[in-house]
Length: 464
Image (cartoon, rainbow, N blue to C red; front, side, top):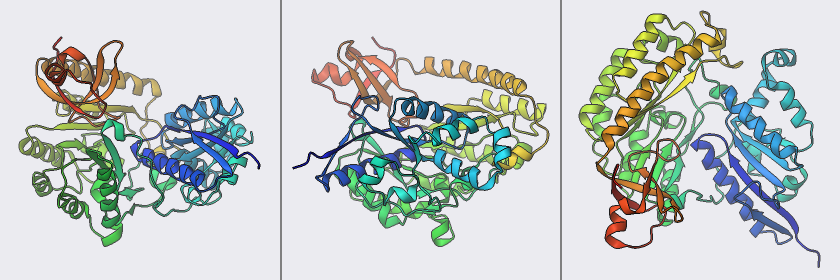
């Protein structure tokens, strides 16, 4: 009898949390293929640098140049070691979209990564795996090297999913894919397509599976959660979905990511108060505060509405956590616009912000806009506003000290007697964590028992 053919693989998730769901679906499919075919020895290695690994699946970010550069650096590391690499996600879609729509001579001139990407694709070790093909390839295809040719759509997966975050007390539930917005700086609709929402019944089934695995926090996400369902019933259905989840006879925490204020009305905010499972967490990617800049970005709201919207959140949710993103020096941003943004940041409305320096993307409409500024000026403005935010964040951290809070354990260092803990309102993988000694944890002092990841603990911030 012949020995089973070995296929030891690993995964790397370089993209967003939405990509993580796809990575978990791929992992579940690969393990199921191995279980159903005894002529193969299929093993998953959590560490992609394990010497037994022969194939690595890399789920990638592709809509920012920095993400694509990181992806190529990682791919090169494994290809140069003779390991087969499958590039999935936005990175693969970007390569295909540029190949179809942009002349090769322009790519050579404008895309800094073009030559390296071409070299890796010709190496015989790097392959692109589309979402559509991921559901049909077999183990033989994967082992010999398979290049996708179909990038035009997909069906939401039905195969088992591996819950790789369950031990940390949370998992993601993707409610829709892709995007209908036309933000001038974003290329996601061009590389991924228009929004595709999942039926409510499928989402509820997913949540029931997560609860059967005793996962206490479920995070709903899409490119734009507030527009969930517009492609199904021609109207936003987010609150229909929340009603169905709220009706489940089960206790768990629910979190929403990526909420846009142009669809959410002030009345919607008042409705959110009624969902007892929902954490008061508001992830609102504003990108700017000045109306002229927002208009050039293709946003559907102005600063006056934003002021009213954020004031209403503060009034309705005294205990909350808010985060946002800002793009620095978007084409057409005047000195007055930038000062307005700096003054706005100084008001300290958000608990967390992410700052991005603007740069052109070949597929983005903003790359054709006028009134651009040199990169060095963009970076100077970036450092200025970052200094403002860093000072605010330091002061905020000092105010937290000596407050008793509830945290989720995410890591345990028994040698140093230290825990890594996530504040209950902070989102996993995004927001800051704390590092605290065992002896400062109320739960530890009272029970003197072992602590596991994913459990809730209380401690006094700043105590020793």
